Amino acid sequence: MNITIVNFKGGVGKSMIAHQLISGFGFNGYEIDPYGSLSDRLPERVIRVDIHQKSIEEPQQETIFDFGGFDDIKLDQAITYSDLIVIPFIPTLETIQGTVDTLVRVASANKPILMVPNMSQKENDINDAKFVFEETLGFEIEMFPIPMSVALQTAINENCAVGELSKQGGIKAYAYKKSSKIIDDLHNKIREYENC
Image (cartoon, rainbow, N blue to C red; front, side, top):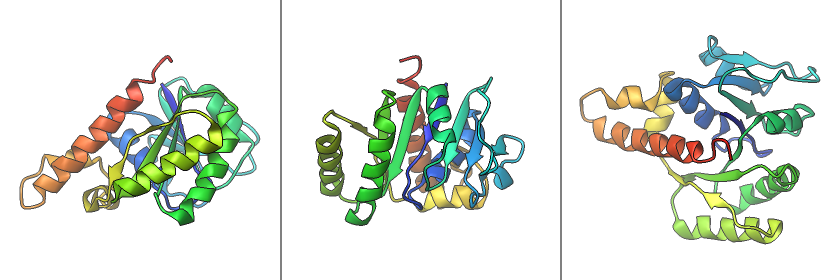
């Protein structure tokens, strides 16, 4: 299974989700982001794709395409190779327009789309965003919210899967286990789109 993770708006959690799927579930990665650090953090699993490169090869193993906050000629190729498009976003007014631009850009590919409201705190904000997205596209979109979590940021800082941290004891174990379950659930949700 291959997944394209994209949003033209930066700082919405694309690389965090890619990192957790790659480090926790054995995906490989293509990093199409000149400012990204995923290939530095996981050099044995992630290939950095040069911004000037015109094409990407079809992967032979399960792969995550992690796109930076810009449109790129390689996006169409990645989507063609992918079973699912994941669009993380922060459910605030400031990020909705960039997310709508991304949705409009990728919707014509007729691939399944999973929206991931990241760092979500208020259900009303998620519902408002869902309404805007569905009004724009004219069809329903599935949402998988990820609540605000220091544990996920810690996992990135320590360059490991949050599931690894959840196996440690101590006072933070509960937060790690809770975040680990969210990432497990996200992975299971993604797998529902396999071979669709």
